[in-house]
Amino acid sequence: MAVLLDERLLPVRQIGIERSRFMGKRSINGRTKGALCLVLLILGCAVSGCRSGQVREPFPPSSEEPGTEPGVVDLNWYINYSWFATVWGDSEVARAITDATGVSVHYQTPKGDESEKMDAMIAADTLPDLVTLGWSEKQNYDMIEKGQVWALNELADQYDPAFYGELDENVVSWYKQPDGNLYGYPNSFYTPEDYRTEKISSNQNFMVRKDIYEAIGSSDMSTPEGFCDAVRKAASQFPEVDGEPLIPIGAEEFTSEGCNSFGPYLQSFLAVPYEKSGRYYDRNTDPDFLQWLKVFRQLGEEGYLKDEIFIDRRAQINEKLAKGQYFCLFFQASDIMNQQRMLSERNPDSVYMAVKGPANSRGDDPELPVSGIYGWTVTYISKNCKDPEKALELLQYLISEEGQKMVCLGVEGTMYDMVDGKACTKPEVKELLYSDRKAYDERYGADNTYWMLQNNAVQSQWKEESDYAIRQLEEWTYPYTVYTAQYSIHFGSDREGMDLHKRQQKIWGETLPKLLLSEDEAEFDRILNDYLQVRDRNDYDGYTAKLDALYNKNKEKLGIEDEEGFQKS
Image (tube, rainbow, N blue to C red):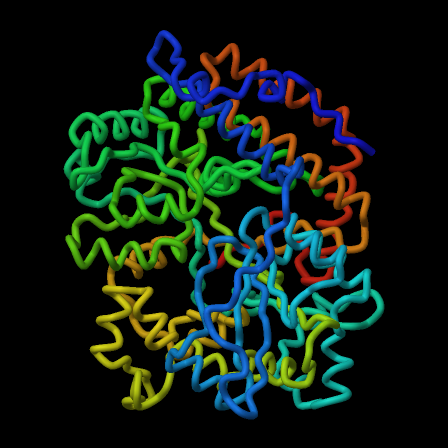
């Protein structure tokens, strides 16, 4: 079924593409409308892959020569994130893993659109030896359906049954396919039992730049009035920070599916439920959520939503975070650690701190999700793998407690010592970690530089107390965490459900920036009404029915009976 996208949601297709029109024309309130056109153009290319006349880029040549060590197998490992720039290199940890497994790794990444690159490799049956991608991507099932990845249990039966002993039974049960096989293994997962027994932070934060926030009086930003007042004061009193223009409100990057900051993260702070009375609840039309989108729209009309937040990619966002250019933003704590440490080195007061951000009209506490049973990414061994036995050995080592300790702490004696049963990182190693993450990765390679199979629950036993700038972001979330894995959306072999999901995400992704950039509330309401009509024409009722069934199936598998998930007492 074709996507029935209303032309009112796709004005970019009718607009002549002239940079002067995009970036030069301003409305009478001084606000640029070019950002909307440019972001829709960029997102259009992301969805289509800019296929017209495009030549597919091959993988860039490896920076390392293969086969440099006798007896070592060189495996190509594809990481499906264009921002990933880590190399296996000659770090202490990389050398130690190679010594333990006889495997050296050459990472490969997409140059452009990740989904298109995965689709192209699957279509051409050219998957590299190992593949890591987000658990929710449709290509997980595509690779399995086309028989292009090995069942890990079959490899274990053939080469080393001890592999089973390293696996989490809950994860195996969750990821086992209808044919009884386990094809991939996740990282960064938490089971319901982990959540009940461990102190787990949420990765979602609303954060402000500490020195600016305190200078404007540590305003209460939980109400629309307080939020707007704080943003206006910050922009007025600090038009520049360290020679760079202040960006009053920051965000994660906008994609073809929307923006997490102005979507799920904001909804978490507003405690918007996933279901009501046992039925799927439409979070995108929740009254409190829409009211806060209107607050951001108003701030945008006043000039506080800068064009760049709609078009910046991850690299540009990271650069601006490292300079402390944002006053406030919804962001993930794990994605700002390196920048936090850089800011702290220069000026401890310039770091970002978590505060209580936007709240719903009842003033409820936020409900911040923790990583669930799906985790973050899933890793596979492809049928093209030149040495499946060694690939399995590498995965077995990385999943094991010994491997987890290696990727977390590094080489004992060289990078850390055990003192009274506790790991103590050597001062010079910690200093480099905090001052120059790139140099740390190249020289040492611990602290989950190689995160593809990281297990946070296992690693918690060695966790050292982090510096305050990191610890504050984590600890602030403790009282507000909830386990919401039952609401994770993955349709597996249900192609119709998968297509409906992608279609609904695409419609929302095209709508969100237009809502935020609308001229006034009347236009906001018109755009919202158009969105509702378009999604209904694209079988929204069928989509929600499938979500109801999926949620119930997930709750049954996880042993969760109550509809709202569960919080720690």
